[in-house]
Image (tube, rainbow, N blue to C red; front, side):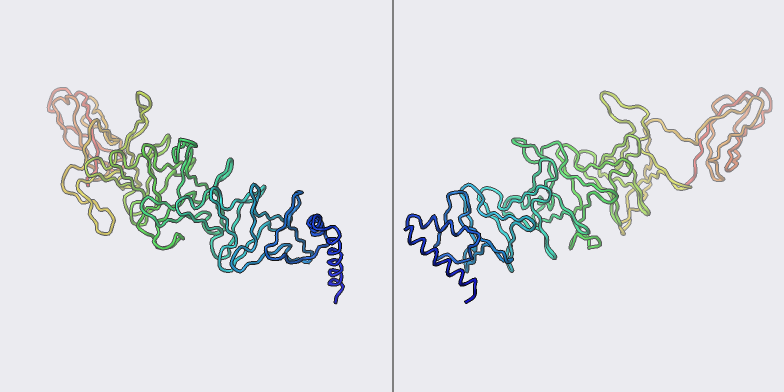
Length: 445
């Protein structure tokens, strides 16, 4: 018999002696007092045992100074430990330097919380996350709901839900539902009767230092970069009367679209503009393509592309804002090309298919930088016009705008890169007054 067992047996005899002396009335209080002694040893309560306390101290207290469990509960089919409280916490775990509550299971949930009217599990942190989930191979946290939100986060001043990842997705949303089910939904709502999605703030915001703030992919297999792409919409924006999708930037593009074979940006509207883009100082639309059209507009009954150079403000417009459509091309390429016909090409690239109809219809005044005016001086039969736009193939149309006297327009001599000379016929007799003229220089196709 070791010393610890002997001391335990001696202590049990002393307890029995005291209980026999004080009788049944004081036995319960004395037993409770002795059980809370710091020297009490672990033991097993009889089946159906009940411990009570009325002075604020724990009804059951367990100490283990050897690294094991202070209190342990085991059950074959029921709860190993079950805590019930009318107004307080059913089960509470606290630790100074380690985990307050730890749950472990080989095949099922390590910790599970249920509630009939409130949150099943709630976590609060003074300086760290209220709830944190870690996993080596699976999701750090998994939340499910039959009819309500799977995950709901609320914060008075900070982020309601925040996701962080060193190399993967910070937040990933997926849905297997119908056309009106979304993997991730953001709404700006008003409390009370305002309802869901009727607020005036931002429903979803994406921020980044140098990368992409918000990216949308339509994938058939996996959302990771390089995976096969699907045929759905990467990013979809809808609005009843406001802006479906809005992009802004201080120095770069507010919205940028890239496509390998299709349209980089495409807008569709049943009654309004498919895409309406405005700018206070720069281009409203800046489109670049390496092989196809930078901007392609198509309409079965209206204008494919329309550009407006003035902005409606109040009762009037801002005059002289700029051109409605501006085309710029390097070298000898055409800045703007007009083709009458349709689009052909079976490889997905639109190819103009002329049909011999009207390619350009101008309503209002037309201005050309290669149009101008000049004058043949008095008693002279020719005049040189400096214009570096003249080429060896330029078509130069000259119209006499005054009476040249007894003379006629003879011919136009081109000097490529410098200009041209207008020549009149020699007058047989009579005066040779100044002869004003206008001209237009165009290039043949």
